[in-house]
Image (cartoon, rainbow, N blue to C red; front, side, top):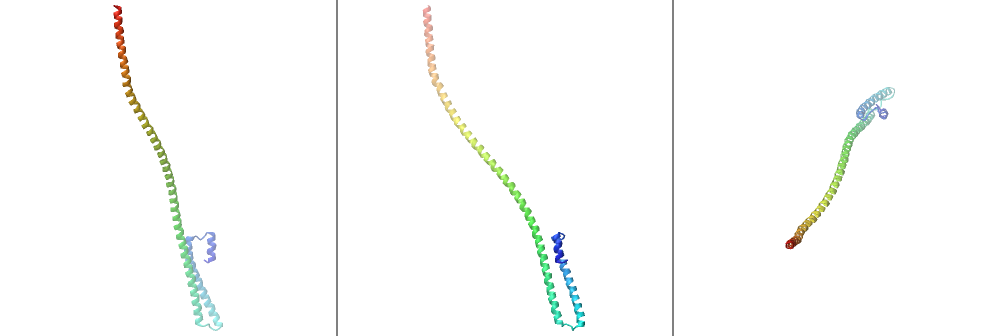
Length: 189
């Protein structure tokens, strides 16, 4: 499969990135076979040509073959390097997907924790307001207790003072009645 065919298939979506590395390896093997067959054809044509012409010298053929082998090895190394890069890309893409999923999970978890934190802060604010109201009520009750105790003490002292004049008045009235009674008795006699 040539580079053009592979590019066409890739653009059509026929070749996926998972199978590309296998295709690259098989492509390099196919190219190697083509080059060997072209070398054999070249040798055969040079042998035919050499029958009609003078034989080229052996060092030229060896140099040509060495160049072809070097070029072939270079192309194979390049294809292997490309295959390795494609595998690395696939691994990095898979790792990127995993990291992306983990990031999304952590982002959702962070959102949940933020909402819980907000709810707890509102609850804390509500409780602090309730505490302030309770403290104010408690202070008002303390003042009321103090006022009531003062009133109680005053009332406790006033009946004693009131009872003394009333007792004195009552005694005077009792004496007056007794006198009146005696006077009435004397008059009636």
